[in-house]
Length: 306
Image (cartoon, rainbow, N blue to C red; front, side, top):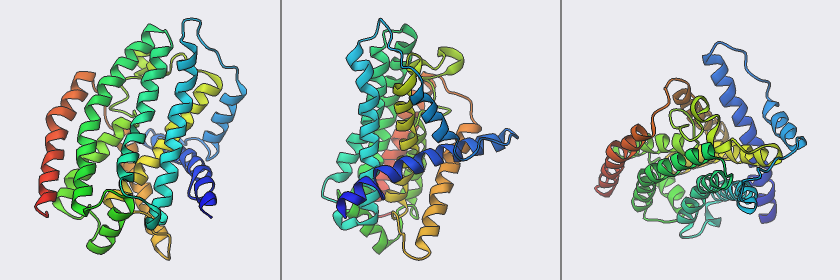
């Protein structure tokens, strides 16, 4: 049963399918905002299959090993996070002490893989994108981890299961002053982790012609896109787990979980479609000067029980 949970539901296979469907949902919202019809539900699956069918080019200037390994490292860690979150959300007792720290570390690896792969491409434009990704990464991780440990301290637990059980006994973390501030900081940090507008600075199609992804094609690009799809599923699920009490698939709980999930993705998509791209200095200033102090404030409020 444990193997089934990790490999099928709510693990690897389920995460990939829901991730690609979430990409479609995001694109559909974007289309509606722009008064378009949008793609059919299977478009994400078709795009991935099409990329796998195409030839993969590796630049002559690239450091081949790093260039090829980066997508696999990013994808595998995103897949592992999705499986861990899904299993711990459904079965809190299967979680272990410190797994929240493990998840935090694993959630950093996809960004590091992007930096690693674009730096290894040998293309100067990709390397500019890599530099921007690194600066952004060093900016959004601090408020994100402060919020994460504030929640862990409030629940007196370093396990996902412990945080879920605390919320079931005391109410969702979101319904408190510290939770509201923390959720705002976390969802903006999530936007940056996903590389979506206004934080798509490393790709910046109008400036860098896709920047960090410029030299990727074929199956390697498909794997990176699968990684992005998994993150679009995993990060909203992570927010639901730490702020809204996690998954509850019993009775009306499954309907409430679906509504929460779709609403968070809708907020992410709305931010993406209603904001201009920031410059890298503006993004860094936002995280260091505004969101980090807010995260610290949320931590203090959590400590005093607000």
